[in-house]
Amino acid sequence: MYTEIFHGLYRIELSKLSSSCYLLLSNRNILIDSGTSDDFPLLKQELSKIGISYKDIDIVVNTHEHFDHIGGNLYLQDSAHIMAHRLAAVKIEYGDDEVTMCRVVKQDVVGYKVNVWLNNTDIIKTDDWFLKVIYTPGHTSGCMCLYETRKKILFSGDTVFANGTLSAILNSGSLAEYLNSLQKLKNLDISLLLPAHGKISEHAREDIEVSIIDNIKRFPDAKYLLKSIGII
Image 1: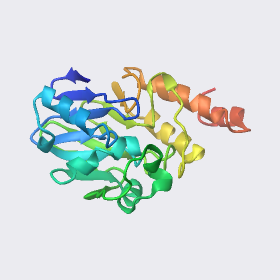
Image 2: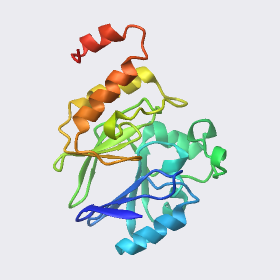
Image 3: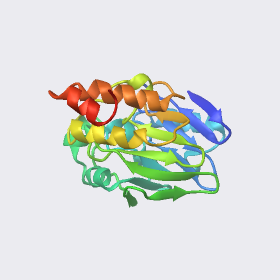
């Protein structure tokens, strides 16, 4: 099922196993995350309903290296440029199943390629979109968000969800790094939070603060840490 957020921006929801995908239309069409490989027929169908072919996708950006975000790449990488943070890209290209968890859902772990290995503050630019890479490790070591500086939109992947829903810290991830990433995002002016799972939010700052508080309580010296970053 797809939802038009506004002209030129669509959210595509596939099965429960897949991340949501975001389609950004312009002179070069961008797809943020591609769902599982099994859900590619659904993705192809929804793109057709919007009015484009999967071959009209010019750029695929993976917010991190998990199977539910990269699976569709296998069908898109012959016609689109695949981009990911360099610490996600190396795991995707080398088929690191320990982190991507592809075989858990019987998804092939080999055959993926990443054309552009991104770094923090890199820019992805089209006529209508100006996306800044914000490196946000924690959920995994290769996580990143994309911040549209002019529209004040954050495509947050699995780093931040609506209502401060906790992000799991999985293999290669780190709770300390996750908290540091949330602190970094807290300083951004965000009007619209577009996560890979769950609801869209117009209250990003509150969502981030709730997530910081809930996660920092996992540390034994939580009260000191909360004071040190100015939350209490």
